[in-house]
Amino acid sequence: MASRFCGVLTLLAVLLSGLNASRPAINQELSNIFNELWRLDVNRMKPGIDYTLSVQGRAGFVSQGSHVVQDHASRPLFSNVNENKLRNTTTISRFMKLLDNYERSTGVTEQVTTEELMEANLFLDAVLETEVMKRAHKYLVSKGQSSSNLQQFKSQLQLIWFHLYHRQRTTGLDSSGFEHVFVGETKSGTEIIGFHNWIQFYLQEKNSHLDYKGYKARIHDLPDQADHVLTLQFSWHSGVKPVSSTFIGTSPEFEMAVFTIVFLMNTERSTTVLVNINQYQMELMVTRHGRFLGTAFPKLISSTRNVRRHSH
Image (cartoon, rainbow, N blue to C red; front, side, top):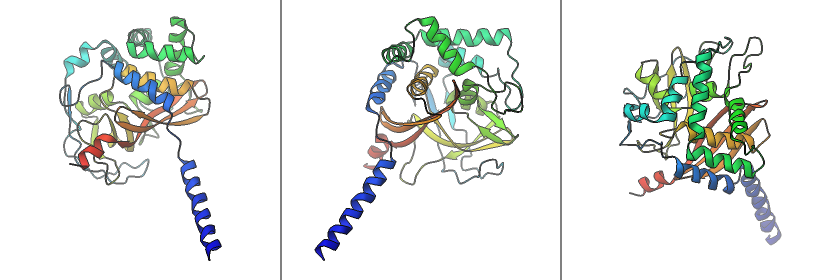
């Protein structure tokens, strides 16, 4: 009997160790650098001061490619945003100028004008002047992933984020990392791909091109208006995004710095790193398209904010 009991315990131990092995360990080094970037992000908007969210109801299940969805949020996600601060923050104002430079549909060749090239160039110049990107650059240089030469680092960012490539191989150059992550794209007319940026979300919602349908979360993880990472469901033009994760309130330079570091510190086609940033534990998902960024977004795992709220 005793030997049988020991055998059961051994089996349980093996099963549990297997479960733990399937979960990525927290990357402490990246957590440390990302928390530095978080503290340096002076352009991050403050919830309840610079913007107000209305998270409303929990969204239901919708299959990818569907355009039929039940609305669990009768009001917009953003009740208000301080647009003066958006316009007067250099990186954000230059970021917003880039959002109308792309063809929404994959399969449609991008036509890039001289003016659009200049806008991207000015945006990168502004980003490189921030303490966030300066610290990210210093870290990447220390890891041998970037040149200490600022112009070479700028060219590296240009290649990763703005270089055009084929997302649909049967057509011309129709996509880029920046367009996919920050602007969003549609595939086959109804499927929304990418679109992981809160500023673009707000602007599209304000112009009635986007309709927020509710938040996505586990039963005990109730988001509120002060959260800086949310998982959402929304419709955009004629398509529906069943699940989309995004930072909220963060600056473009913070998001670009974080995802650039994950991109350059890994060589796999698809990378997931588990990190703690501020009050949030999250997975950062990055997929490469050769030497270029395919997609990048945060996936919230847990929040100490939620723990504190539920203990009240």
